[in-house]
Structure formats: C-alpha cells, structure tokens
Length: 353
Image (tube, rainbow, N blue to C red; front, side, top):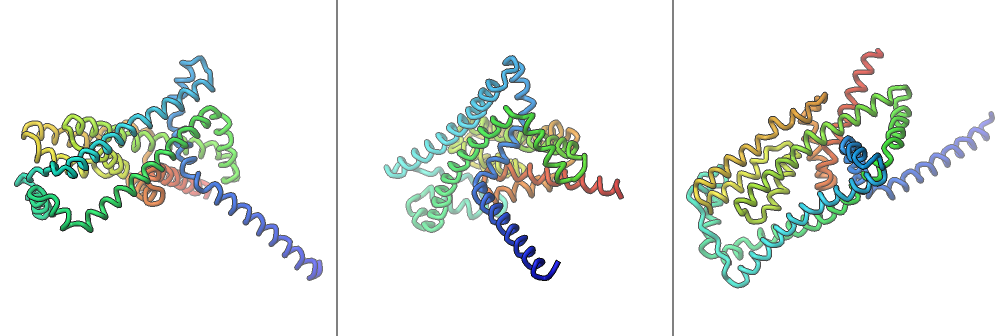
C-alpha cells in the first residue's frame, strides 16, 4: 500500500468516525431530556415486578390488563397524595394572604424556651417577638430576605410541577416495561454480555436487579414510610403547610439524614402553640418516626446486599443537585448499582488473576 492509498484510507476512516460521532451526539441530545424519567421508569419496573406478577396471577395471567391496572393504580398513588399536599400548601398560603391583607394576621409570641434552641435560639426569639408585636414592620425590615424566600418558593413550586410530570412519565414507562418484562430482561443480558465479552452477563443482570430492589425498598421505601407517618402526626396536630414539611422529611430521609432534623422545627412550633401534654406526645412520636429506620432498613436493605450508606448518601445528594427531586430517587439507586457492579468486577478480576 502506497502513501496515497494510506492517506485516503485514513481520511475515509476519519470521516466515517466523525459521522458516527455526530450521529451519536445528535441522538444523545435528543434523548437527554428523557434519560432521568426513563431510568426512573426502569427502576420502578424492576422494583415493582414481584408485586406485578401477583397482580397478573390474580387477574388470570392477563398481561396487558395487569399492566394497565398497575399503571392506573400507580398514577393514583402518585396523584392523590400530591393533590393533598398541594391543597395543604395552597390553603395555608391563601389563609395567610387573606388574613395579612385584612390586617387580622397575628403571630403568636414565642415561648421563652425558643431562646434555648442551639445556635439560632436568641436571634430567632428576637425576630419572632418583633413579628408578633408588629408583623408589617418586621417584613419591611427584612424585605430583601423575604423577597428571596418568596422567589425560592415560587421557583421550587415550578420545579415540583415539572417533577410531577416526570414521575407520571416514568410510571407510564414502567407500565410498558413490566408488560414486556421478558424481552427487556433478555436485552439487558445481551448488553452485559457485550460489555463483559464473556458469559457473565446473566450474573451482572441478576446483581443489577437485586441491587435496585434492595435499595428501592430499603432506602426509598423507608423514606416514604417515614414521610407518611410524619404527615399523619402533623395532620393530627394541625400543623400549617404540613404537606411542605412532609416533602422536606422525605428529602432528608432519602439523603440518609435523620428526619428529626426537620421534625425538630415542627416540634418547636407545636410546643409554642399547643398544650404541654400533646406537644410532648408529638415529640415522642417524632423521635420514634425518625428512629424507625433502625429496624426498617435491615428488613429491606439487608436482604443479601451490603451497599455502604455513604454511597447511597452521595448518590442521593449528587442526584438531587443534578436533576432535582427525581434525581434524589434515581441518584441513590444508580450510584449503588454502579458500586455493586464495580465491586463484582473487581472480585472477578481477582479470581481470574
């Protein structure tokens, strides 16, 4: 082969690679907005599949009917609490706005025990006391801070609306996947076989399935249970905007932070407005809810898996920073999955060597 032919072949190969790279980049940019919902849909499908099989069996092995019913039930379970939480926030905001405009909004004076709060007690008591004496003057004094808070709330509300749409899309995708589970499983095995270049694709696929189910149940499941229990307690105590506090509890629980970090502020409010006995009962209840993960996680996460909590924490926080609330769910599982697959690959490399 002379130099002219070699140059021509190099140019032709470079053009082909460039076109393939362009096509791959173009496809990635088109599909990029759907990556997180699709991944979350896959996670939901894998986690829920054992229950789907029971539903399918109860319906006489009618696959399409079971998938349709599952999708409708999942959407109802998503939409119903979302509407309840939204109504709680909207009703509280409307009541506060109406009372403020009519001049009837009064802030109760703080209890002296507020001063005993660590780090922020004295300052919080002073601002709270000033707001109870003259709310309008206090808002004017802290106008810039108030505007930042309102702007953050509005921005968060818009983000939550987009997140709900992503959840709806993910549930629909999961319904499609569970209806075609066998085909999706075969494709997963083929992908792992191509990546590993050997016959260990089945073991990696099974490891992925076990990891997703374990973390989904042990982390997300426990966080949802703690959020629901917290919501029930706050509803009983008639805590304003309990829906917003419930969302905060779920976020910190998924991030592996004790929910008492959020519930502590709620308890402080309850102590300030309620009688001592019910406030103490509510405090004990919150402590029990916050510590419930101590016996709930071993029931779910401990089923053959040993993913370090630090991995899940980093995945949850990193996912939330990258993709918002839905990233909080996806990040914890994806990073845990990556960790388990990497450790399995390392163990296999040691055996081979």
